[in-house]
Image 1 (cartoon, rainbow, N blue to C red):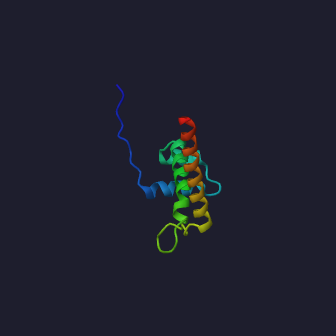
Image 2 (cartoon, one colour; image 1 turned 90 degrees about the vertical axis):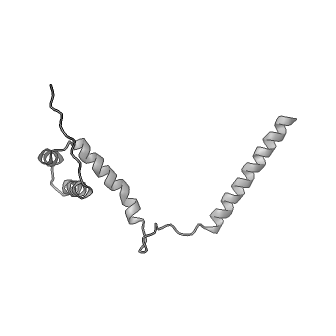
Image 3 (cartoon, rainbow, N blue to C red; image 1 turned 120 degrees about the vertical axis):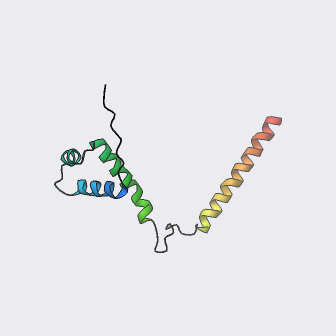
Amino acid sequence: MSQSKKRRKWSASKKLELVLAGMEAGTEISELCRREGISPTQYYSWKKQLIGSAESVYGRTGNGKAGVSKPDPKEEELNRLRAVIAEITAENLELKKTL
């Protein structure tokens, strides 16, 4: 019978440490993974998560809120006009169906 191994849990700081170590120049990913006891697939998954979350980290302003500015008034007007066109088109199609 195979011996059941307990699944290891990695802390966020340890994952970050490993990914950053792998990103250093001259680092062999396969050697790093072998030394730490993880698969290269797991390493690349963690790296993808880190890079994917960078936008949310760097998109913040000094007050901690996301760096989203007020919507452009022209963009708001364009969206309103598109909604009106969609409504009129839907009404037009409904009237054509009833004729």
